[in-house]
Amino acid sequence: MRYDFIIVGAGSSGAVIANRLSESGQFNVLLLEAGGDPLITEDVPYLSGLILNNPMTDWVMPWPRGKSLGGTSNLNHMIYMRGNPKDFDNWATLTGDPQWKYDNVLPYFKKFENYDGHFPSDEYHGKNGPMQVNTQSFEPQMEDWIKSGEELGFKKTDPNARQTSGFFPCDFTLSNGKRWGVYDGFIKPALTRTNLKVYRYARINLDAQNQATGVTYLRHGRLVVVNATKEVILSAGAVGSPHLLMLSGIGPATHLKSVKIEPKVDLPGVGQNLQDHVSCLYGPFILNSTESFIMSRDLKFSSLIEYATLGIGPLSWTYVSGLGLTHSSLGDPDWPDLALTYIPLGIYPTIHKDVAAFFGLKESLVNDYVSDFHDKDANFILVYNGLPKSRGSITLRSSDPFDAPLIDPKYFSDPNDMKVMIDGFKFAVKLYETANTWKKYNASLVKKHFPGCETHPLQSDAYYECYIRHATATMWHPTSSCKMGNENDPMTVVDSNLRVRKVAGLRIADASIMPQITNTNTNAPCIMIAEKMSAIILKTWG
Image 1 (cartoon, helix red, strand yellow):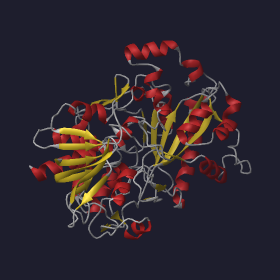
Image 2 (cartoon, rainbow, N blue to C red):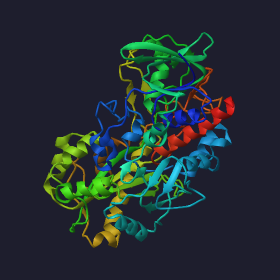
Image 3 (cartoon, helix red, strand yellow):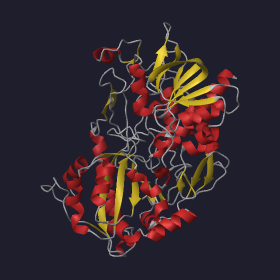
Image 4 (tube, one colour):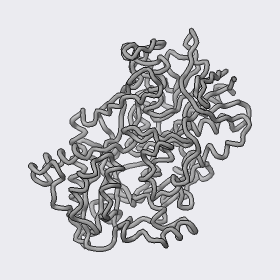
């Protein structure tokens, strides 16, 4: 079988490319994905914490990875954040190509948006794109969050325009209270196209001249070889793309030999430069008023009726009611390195189970910490480092394509990352201790040590570091493992047009190509990357 283009991975980038390349009907396109359609439960925002680690839709690794049409956009918390203009200007500097500057990628963000969010603006937002970007109908204490930020001098600003420090309500990829991922926006409308096929996948094939000729994939228990007459596009994500490259003999030669794979192209940068937003849930800040959301008290049968008929109410909530961007003692106020996600969630009897499952922590640890506060109204702050300096790696466990790769994020290998997180904890305490908004609720951080940190004085730097190390979690934003760069950097994997070095006919478009992670959520930048590469390919092939 032969296709013009073969796209490997139907996530936030691959779905977009499949749609755009098949749109005109000029090209035959094959989209390869290891999963099926999204589950109905993935539509409901409040259930987003329950769909992680489901083998039907998640690869079930230390990091959640989508395994269905739509990829990880079916698992995320739907927060719509582009990043900071300086993120993209920095990409342009690192690649030596001005096409990646913020002003030059802004049209691609606008292209996919159908924006009806908190900050309407013709200059910064699009109205006719396939991705729905909206507000939430249910946002407990959102106004309290904004007011408390204003008390500390932070303005309510659009984080998706000329982002700077500020407090704001979030926009989400939602429609009528339901998740709106790239499956809804890009794949579903294209499934009836006769020039687009969707199958499962395995590995890339190269000829003697290192031309990507096609892909071998598994279908109904047998291996199938398909050829690409123009290009193969890899969009398997920050874990999947380097994994597949290395299985195909493209990567660090020494490492490939160590797992008995014959190196075809020695690219030392494959799987290196891995970055993620390391996070930690801080709190609870106990309130003396029934303002927060307690599941056992506030989620009722009427909530189900309300959601089923109107798409509103608690089941339409993503757990997030706002976000704040600021800078650490090492950072820049106009390029924030600290994000604080506001979660007004009270303590219900099974919260320890949900928090443990969601953040990959031990149930007993979380239960020991929160069990004294059952049925108390509370707030939590999810603190994360937006501009981490630590760099990790993806390597092969073996030559077996069904063996999960080895993921080593090397969190806090750069000590400055811990300093940033400690500054984030201190800022959260300052916010709740000084803002009158929280004083009216007599808000206070629990005076209890996190288990394992009892030897350190509460609110000391040593205590904060201990807490963070015990409760470290991913923000589910892995990037940069096949980085885009200039030709003089030996660790460059793709050039600024996303072509894999030393391999003809092969490109990568997903989070793995980011030279440096954007300072907020990564789903929107992945869609932008795909829109931009689709335009490059269509221009190349007419």
